[in-house]
Amino acid sequence: MRRSYGLLGRFQHPAQVIVTGFAAVALIGTALLASPIATESGESAGWLTALFTATSAVCVTGLVVVDTATHWSAFGEWVIAGLIQVGGLGIMTLATLFTVLVTGRLGLRARMFAQAETKTLHMTDVRHVVRKVVVFSLVCEAVAALVLTGRFLLGYGEPFGRALYLGVFHAISAFNNAGFALWPDSLMRYVTDPWICLTIAIAVIVGGLGFPVAFELLRSWRRPGRWSVLTRITVGVTVVLLAGGTLVFLATEWRNPRTLGALDDSGKLLAGFFTAVMPRTAGFNSLDLAAMYPTSWLATDLLMFIGGGSAGTAGGIKVTTFGLLAFVIWAEMRGEREVHVGHRRLTEAAQRQAVSISLVSIALVAVSTYVLLALTPHSLDRVLFEVVSAFGTAGLSTGITADVTPAGQVLLTLLMFIGRTGPLTLGSALALKDRVRNYQLPEERVIVG
Image 1 (cartoon, one colour):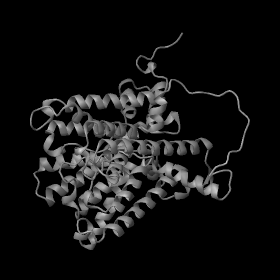
Image 2 (cartoon, helix red, strand yellow; image 1 turned 90 degrees about the vertical axis):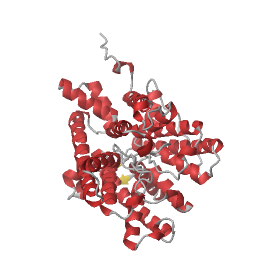
Image 3 (spheres, rainbow, N blue to C red; image 1 turned 30 degrees about the vertical axis):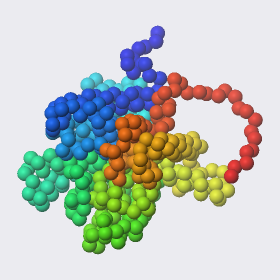
Image 4 (tube, helix red, strand yellow; image 1 turned 60 degrees about the horizontal axis):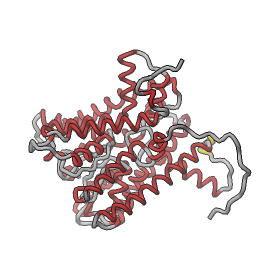
């Protein structure tokens, strides 16, 4: 007898549930933000503005078409914070936690869904991992909120209630790599404040590492020799990108009077590091991005496209994908048939997945840039920046988001959604079943290059 699983039984692949879950939360957020009580004026924001903002929040992007602090009421801001939290943890992570708390059990199908969202390697570990994910996230957010609240309270004379509100909101936004801020200039007013900038930067880095890597580092941070391939690649590439990005921004913007040029040396170092961290798909900015040189925009495009760690709150193709491609290229240049990382051999499936994700992402960015160029009067460098920011769920902008046409905003909304759920996840969710070839065709060599 075939057993029915209700709504979950309608889906044949966990990815379908993940995509549907994110879409459902985005639509719920749209309905809440479209209500009159969500705005300061008491009038509806309109469905497109509500949809864009809700999708940006649940996809932890940070792109906005209206100023968060002045347009939305306290209710609207808490809706945005809630969407960020749900999007950061992942629909299936929360659903799995609720299943465990309510029933005390976790069925095989629910384990599969949670495994697909949390990227755990063993299905038997899902229940334990989900609990750790939630606790770890809340603890990190609480620590960041505590530091930020204290700084706003003692350093800027904010009333305790306002300081706590600012601290909690920005801690949630930072750890989940969302980049929503409650000031029109993001964090530009705090560009030389290490308590605020470093706290938010650290929260962004920790949230963007990915939960499996963060857990492994907590267990064995003193024994790098025991790290898995995932942790080695993630930590190694992250350090290289942060250091390289900092040096690039310092070298490019050091004498720019509208960015780093107006700061002292210590302020330049802090702002350069902060600017290198944010393209990990966080979305905050302490410098005026519109005043940066085009070379800095290009560097930011590359960092946003790569993004952060797998199974974390960051977007992009992920540093793991980027690192795997680097090892594949190195092995090919050396004429080796197999790809090795440390003392481990990478599977062909992982190599194919890295190549597929990269090529699909490049094609999506290229096509979207072409379409958005046709829909807006802005230059290629600004449009490319906006597209990569939306796809990488970074939330950084040169200031053209609000000027994009309604059709362009719909395109950016789709890009944010695809960037969060993942090109291959979305594709597999649309497929009814996997195709299995039961035969092999004759092999033939093809000229490449």
